[in-house]
Length: 153
Image 1 (cartoon, rainbow, N blue to C red):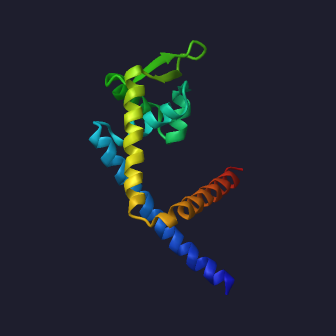
Image 2 (image 1 turned 90 degrees about the horizontal axis):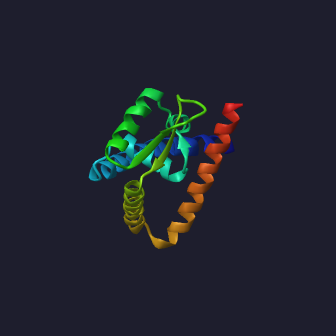
């Protein structure tokens, strides 16, 4: 009986995560568009903001992109004045990426908007459910990361 319940719960979780991922992509797309970015530019900016002094290889791996696709995204962010790139002296194929001063201000504004969206979403959920929800999602993320690490071995 326990195995049946586990399978039933797994099916519900699979369906929910599929739908949630699709909605999260739509949410990012809307926010990016409101700030004159593509969704890929939005994600790339978040990566650069998260890890200062990151190189293009690291971002390409984190975003699961080819080097040429990432270059086009970075070109757009440089053109918009949000990112500065410097060729690495040791390996000219690699670039170090930094937020420009304009990029720092912009990503701060973007992060505030992102948090406000989530505040609005939480506003539609009973306040007594906020912490249990965050706890459950933290546990889910941890379990997924553990599963991913096992798959990489």
